[in-house]
Each structure stands twice: as structure tokens, then as C-alpha cells.
Length: 191
Image (cartoon, rainbow, N blue to C red; front, side, top):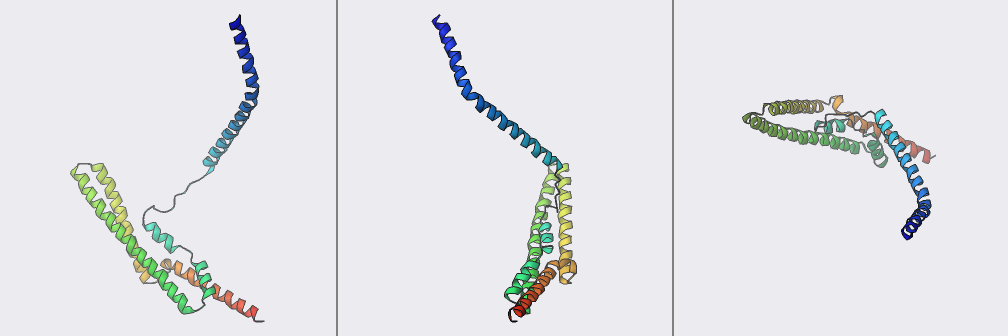
């Protein structure tokens, strides 16, 4: 009989303890439902998202990014500080030199990659890993194509081809706007 009472008292204690746990469990269940809802919303958002990879993911992309960089704001700010045309021309020379150095750095990188891939192709052929050799030959062809494109870009820059000087033109445009803004500000403050 004593054991039976212990069991009953055990149940009564659990019920007392359960009263305290019930709201907490219910609250956790609600939080878990909210987490599941937010996970479902995130999954729905991911399904609606479109990811676009731009560029080749190779060093030539650095050149394209530089060429398409908009220097207009920089030109504008420079003109507000110093409206001297020789300053503008010096900055244009700096931008041009930066691009030429970029050509050199990227060219060296591609030449290094070509040497490395050529060695790997030879090693793959010696090991009769013809599939790997084919993959490496495709990569080598891409590197050579990019190197040819870079050389063509260098020639275009040397000939002042507008395709290669967009960053310079954007700087000049910004500089001109900055000079105009500084002039208008000067005129308005002197009247």
C-alpha cells in the first residue's frame, strides 16, 4: 500500500510540474511553427530568385571591370578641388597608366597559367590520362584566347579606340561638370 501511495504521489507531483511546463512547451511549439513558416518563406524566395553569373570568372574580368568603371564622380570631386586642366590631364594619364599596368599584370598571369597548364597536359599524356589532357587543352585554348583579346585591347588603347577609353571619358565628363558647378557657385557667391 505504501508503494501504491508513492506512485500516486509521483503522478500528482508530475501533474503539478506539468502545469508549469505546459505553457512553455506550447510557447516553444508556436516558435517552432514560426521558424518553419519563415523557412518555407525563405525557400519560396530562393525559388523565385534568379542568379546570374557575370563574366568569365577569370583574370580578364578585372580588365573589363576597370574599363567599365565610372570615374565621373571622381572627376567631379577633383574639379571642385582643383579646376586646372593640367591636373585633369595628369589624372587622365594616371588612369591610362593604371589600365596599361593592369594589361601587363593580367598578361603575366595568363602566361604563367599557360606554362602551368602546358606542363600538366604533358604529364597527363604521359600518364595516359587523356580525358584530363583534353580538359586541360580546353582551358589552355581559353587562356590563349583571353591573351589574344588582351593584346587586341592594348592596341585599341594605343589607338585611342573609344571602346577602351570609356573610363577616361567618364572622368573628363565628371571633371567638366565639376568645373561648371564650381564656376556657378563662384558666380552666385559674388553677386
